[in-house]
Amino acid sequence: MRVGVDLGSAFVKISTVRADGVPVPVEHPGLVPGHGVPRSSADPWAALADALSPLHASRVVLAAPPDVPVEDPAGTVAPAVAATVWARHRSAAGDGLLVVADLGAAGCRVTTCRMEDGLIGVVAEHSAADETGFGAVFDRAVLDGSGADAALLWRTRAAADPRRIRETLELAAARPRYAGAPLFGAGPFPVAGTVAAWEPLGARARDLIHRVAAGLAGEGVAGGGPAWLLLVGGLADFPPAGPDLAAAAPGLALLDVPGDGAPGAGPFAAAHGAALIAAGRATAGDRLAHPVTVRARQITGGRLVTTDIPVPGPIVAGDDPRYAGTGPSGISLDGLPPGAPVLDMRADGTCWSLADPARLPDPGSACRVGVRLAAGRPELVLAPLDGRPPTIHPLTRHHAR
Image (cartoon, rainbow, N blue to C red; front, side, top):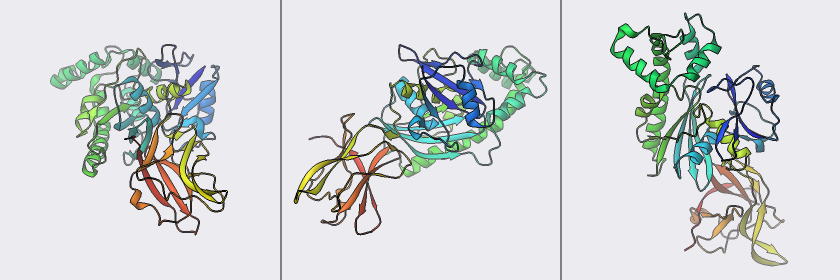
């Protein structure tokens, strides 16, 4: 079994991909539908091992936040990137920006991802200031005075119809005498306490999303292309989240991912995306695991020739550049036709050209040539052999004339 895992602070979400290509939560003895497997330990690796112990997983791709150290970067992916993989696989979202708002137990994190030519990269990350929790605060407030335990809350919330929850909220807001009505249609959880718990959390999320969306608009980051908002995490499918938070995001369209028959798709978005990667049905997007070559000029046998030089992989976003193998004379990009491809992805058939050839070093400069991923785009790194600082050169997808 190939699985994707989202190691959350309250739940471990584990997904697999059915034969028809649809990612679904894994059947697990500890599964709380719509939420995942409750974490058994504060230690992330102990919690992960406990959650995986009943399963016979042949491959695991882990969606891990940046503060969780990982031993195998090739088997991990940023949660927002995994969620973007799932959203792109299940929706019509094409190239553009996707602002992923993760409403989790520990906090509210907003990540801007760029989707371009099959690559998905993180442009920026933002967290709400002075976080002391998010979904966990909501659960504690709803439980307060109810006499119930967390397990009952999780089960009740997972079984409730979101439309029924919204109708109850609207009724209580219009007629205060219904403040004692059960929020989920059943269970000892009155709607008044729920609204009171959500208001400060919603305000925090709205403010963060608004600032991120306004910043994108002000900086022109989207470049006139499409931009969407995707809500994920434990509170993503809670009714006040969608319309309230989308209204706070000027210039962003709320991405409606079609239902796939998997309960809790919003909370399981990162796990679903990781499962698609584990099953080989999608690429992580923030790494180049396949062969990459750089087209450059190199002295071979006493002659200056144009050649394709392999770059060792994998190339992972956030890592140091990977440099092509060079001899003592280095590599030069001089003499390549203007607009010619300089990077060949080979496996996916795409080539990339220099976005600004005029920024190349002086003619005759010999360099080490490397490749890195930044914000979802490949870049060349030219390190002159004379010891001058390396220069960064953005690339653009090459379209043959």
